[in-house]
Image 1 (tube, rainbow, N blue to C red):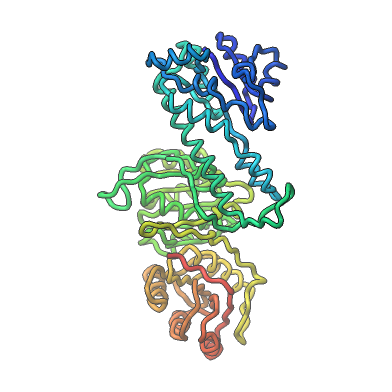
Image 2: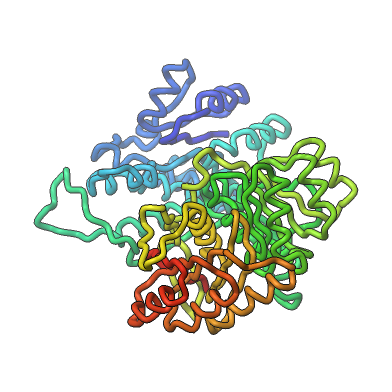
Length: 528
């Protein structure tokens, strides 16, 4: 058996080569890898000796040769192939270990020149990978260090790789090539090329959205069904999911997550992550129906639950702090589909042990979790895709523009910032009443802002919550004064809205007439 080794990332390669040598596998290698293995006392044949042709063009040409690709592509069960190898003095290559030039890491660096990007486009590596992967019945293709252990386990146990493993390695190899080519396409089609600036130091300007958009996902699991039982579905994650995102979570117990569970869980998790103090978010049908901050998870949950106990039934609950026994006991009294937190105490897990259907998700949060979010958002439309930068805007106190005679109190300003965070995660049209770090009424997803305001009031009344002296956040501007009148009639004394309507002055005059404070945020949060 012969193995050809050519790796850019040399992590673990020496130990692997030693194990292969111990099994009697002949080692062939290129350039820097060959030098490294030789320095470790391993007998290694350089590719140039195999091809009888020197590496040339600064290493651009070394493995692009029939003695390499013939050895990889020849079918061992085809006499004509084997006869051709013999006639041309070509030996078979049974194992190929390759990882590619670090193109993705190179272009991710600030100030990457076009020359550096181009030089890190691997040619020979992908060509060999494709040859070996195509001939998977006879050749094992290893493209990642995470595969070393499985390969060695089978070679030690059986002296060869199983068909199952070789096929899996082949699939992984073609996936890697697809990812690599997609990254190159994304980069090159984003470059605003300026020939007059071309030099070795040329750092091109890049468009935010590339001419071709290639995105890669890895399947997490098949789902029982989609949004409805007659639809099929699966869950995929990014190749490199953001730290603290839903896709990095671990399910500790409970039934398999459903399509709707995952969609709602993401809404709850992204919302709760936006708070830097202990918070709880309860989501039902993609909308927050209760959000609150508190000194403890128990306090935050108790306040959030009060907002809308009816909708909380069968909801998704997220905490941004570890769940302790007290919070677990309170949550366990209601029907909950999914409960998420950065961690659970041993006592909290014990509380839910008897509730075997409750899905517990542990999602580790980095210290800067408020800043770690997806950079892009996508939405499928008929035969196309909408792509936009994610709505990661964070409103600061200094951003608020007070436009009324009445000034908000410090308490009202604090609640306005809280309400604005919640409104960002409520489907448009969104109206959110808040007080003392707690949602008091949420109106979501209506065609009319007036109806959203009325629904928020109805919800508060049903929960026996008074809207007197509350603050209100509206995700978009009030086009007429009637929306303002509805929330003020309900009891609001302070309102936050983006501003920007042709009738802004009419609404400001109405606020002054009603004796309430109003601030403009300068940004809206449509969420369709």
